[in-house]
Amino acid sequence: MTQSTDISELIKRMASPALRTSEVVNQYYTLCIPFYREFLGNHWHTGYYPPEGPLGPHDQLRMERHIAASAGLTVDCKVLDVGCGIGGPACHLAQITGARIHGLTPNPVQLELARSLALTKNVADKVCFDLGDAGALPYADASFDVVLFFESACHFPDRTRFFHEAYRVLRQGGRLAGEDWLAGEALSIDQLDRYIRPICNTWAIPTLGTRADYAEGMRAAGFTVREAVDLRHEMALLRGFMVDQGDRMQVSEEMQSTTDPVRRMIMESLLHLGEAAEAGAFTVGRFLAVKNGNGS
Image (cartoon, rainbow, N blue to C red; front, side, top):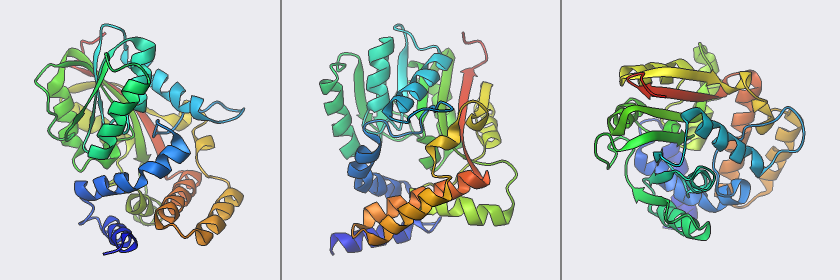
């Protein structure tokens, strides 16, 4: 079987909710690693965008600092980054806070790249990476002060299970903090079909939850939810997405001319995001929850 056939088969599986398993998500991320590194470097998530001025990698770092500050990361914290990608956020936050950070990924290729990055960034004494599943965290009860997620939970087949697992591995007063892709609240069936389904189909997302879904899931796991923020109300979120129709037209033309099926898939994914963001059907949420509500 050729690589092109493999990719075509993966794309077909991604387009079917019944077939969009954790294995498919893993295959997707393995294929996309070189393209994500080309477009996003080592930090695979939305930035915290200013209202004006140039956009760049500093925006992703700003988002990480913002999430870390909300969670109260300090040199005394033991932290778990679930769905850590190739380790960019974990290494960055260890550098600026001195916290001890474990990164967890289900992807063996990402794991090796993350471990290499920790050595390159000279933080291997503070950062380590493990292979594992967000729905069955390979750590003992009450092991961490903070659990983080940066646009990883949307890929988990069972986010509710992840919230329960995060609660289990946190100490009393521990914090769950992160940001993730969301569907807008109260979308119609037509809006879900037009805007949200194409995002899930092309980004290997089992389901895209709402801000209320996440908050409810955290509370059901035992957390007190301190913050559940639609980032459109906190910063210039839409600057990071292709909401301009002219920009989307240009990318669409480039997409038609590329011969690389993975690059074409990613470009199509970006177009779906831009259209949904422009329509108000897609957003990004920021969350902070505390175990038993007695954290500081």
